[in-house]
Image 1 (cartoon, rainbow, N blue to C red):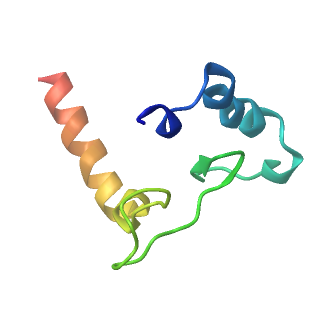
Image 2: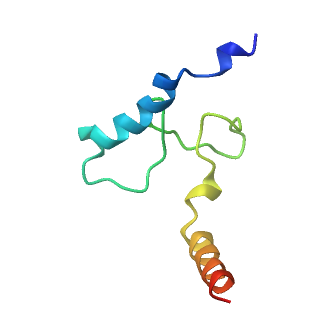
Length: 75
């Protein structure tokens, strides 16, 4: 059954509501959230689901991507 892998609308929205209202996140930014909690960071051998990949938090690459994007949209 595929159904067990999908969330209901309420379940899908719950992490967004939690992130907007949780005292745990007061003054904290730049985190990835899933299932009403801060998502765990994956490593090289981590599964490709349920964890934040290291490249998603690479500030150097994010800055490069931002600059390339600015160049592309201002051309």
